[in-house]
Each structure stands twice: as structure tokens, then as C-alpha cells.
Image (cartoon, rainbow, N blue to C red; front, side):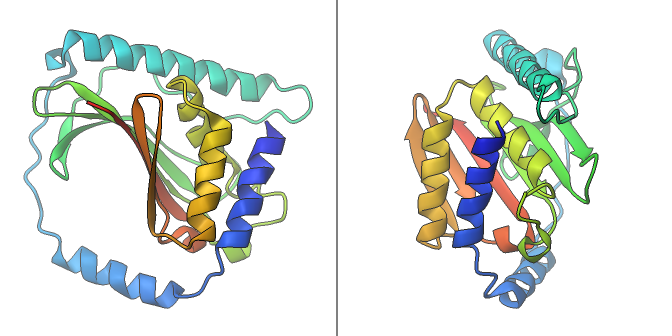
Length: 213
């Protein structure tokens, strides 16, 4: 577990130079100023397609099992927040899709925050998942990577829960960082995985796991 985490962090440290940080901040401010507020119309979870509900509930159970594995590690136990069960959260329209927040929590040991979301189409059928992380800037992260650990482990838990290959995930992330891409997409099994890493030097990143229709 720790070996995989350190590999991820090492790749990030090599790929993220921290250049262009101020420019990114300015662009983010401009984006925020241009965003128009969208009326939020909640959709009850009971209205979700039955097959999709079963899939999401299975995902949550597998995610929580992985969280238990981290906690029970005999060498380096790490406590993460579990996704609450049973699932009852409503869906809200966000960026053209229906989003259901499964977990939104702060890091337990360091400054940081992450959110795990299930995504649905207009027919209320599952189309994937997303994790967004806000943590310490790269220049404040120790060699051990503890400041980013909880967000990275949550992302790894999603990979495990949906049955994707963790080694391939690390390889593709490394490729994206080496090539200094803002976004990078690869395919594994029946998912397209997309990294949004333009602001990774600021400790902010997002990963989308989109089901191939």
C-alpha cells in the first residue's frame, strides 16, 4: 500500500515543477467570475434506475472494505472516512449531469478536503464517478507524502472498488505529468479515466471515471 502511494508521490514530484502557479490562480479567478449560477433541482435517490442503484451500492461497499484494509494495516494503519450507508443523498444537476455526493470530508491529520461523487445521466442511470481533492501545495509536501495521503488513498480506493488496474493508473498518471498535460484520458476495462491536473502543484486535482456506454 505505502509503496504504491510513494510511487505516485514520486511521479508527482518529478512532474510538477510549480511553474505557472500565479497564472493558474489568475485563470481560476476569471473562470469563477464568468460562471453563472445554475438553479439546483434535487432528484430523489429513489428515482434512480434500479440497476444503477445496485451498482452504486456495491461500489460503496467495496470502497468501504478498502478503507478497512488501510485501517487494519499492521505496519502503517491509516484511517479514512467511510462512505455512509445506506445511500440516501439526493442528486443535483451540476455541469450538465446529475451528481450525487457520496462522501465529502476533510483530511483527518492534515489540511485538505476531498469529495467522492456518483454521476448519472438525464435518465438517472449511472455514468461514472468522480473524486476532487484539495490539499497542500506541492512545495509544502514532505518526502513521505503524508499531506496528500488521504486524498490519494481515496482515489486508489475508487480504482479498487470499480475493478481497475492500479499499476496502469500510476503509469498513466506518470505519463500525464511527464508530458506536462493539464488533462489526460486513458481506457481501462469499461471505463475512461481522466486526470485533471492543471493545478496539481497547488495540491488540487480531480479524476473522472466514466463508464463507456
